[in-house]
Length: 213
Length: 228
Image (cartoon, rainbow over all chains, first blue to last red; front, side, top):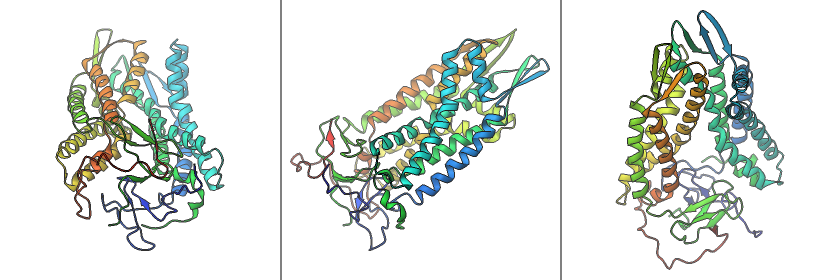
């Protein structure tokens, strides 16, 4: 790497986030629209850090009811039993399918929690204008973006169990109120990962500037 | 002319400006700083993903119209389709969950395949009209929400959970979902959105530069991404 390495923002050029075209500003102080695809040009995702923090905090709050409330209620011959995400994992483990219990534990507990911790770490290091471990942080961000969707696993499991186990009056399964909170956590963390601008890892000095395009 | 030389780009992940060298067929270029893939030169960039998209559309139709799995317990039987998972959630009062499940399992993959078919067909003969770029933008937006592979794993977990209570029989739909996932992954591996952008008419009315790039293009200048 030479010392002359330039980011697009420092050189005064703007890179289109839609089609990737690099272009000069339309007028001084005004980036304008991409000449190729017509999308509005911005030097950074607008208020990236604030937006991402808001989504991370909202997801962390919703994570509590997502785990405390039942996701499935099974009614067998009049008696009903409720399962939370954790008790579903415990049930899978006790019934002998530990590889499956591990998959659900990773997808439903470890990935959402890991995503919240990872995004908070990335936000804090960017706000402290840290220049350390940039490569590791960039890799961490890519991992967060890549694995986030797998948290939706439990929602699909619940949906198909509900769809199939409707053998009234013998046995029926209804969705619990925890599912919607859990799904909100997954959706919010996916949006949070998307709104975080990874370029801030490399150029935290641009944090304060918000050129409007 | 506001744009810089077309082979100069800023890395989408770290912002580093660099010139992309001429890539061999099938080659990729990585960012000199953050190592993310910044350019590809896929072999047969329109026809291959187009053929895969046609196959994916067929697999999608089969996956959504045939039964996914059936269940029998003490003489009683039940079956479900993909959309059946969302429909039962809706009728049990979880409308929001049902909507998101339907979106991630059916609407997102379906519209992604449909948009890809239209975009690739329209881009076969450049210059492609401007709306091709707009459709590509929507396709790129819905792609992360297309969760067929997560759904399949979810179905398998659900099957094993239910198998302890009743006999479960996988249907044709299940195999079609497996095929659909493989085809969607193959589309992602063979398709390069940049190829489409080099073929559409620009927003400012400029016609796209003629392909293919001149073979005597100057070699990489500053911070050329490493080829692999």
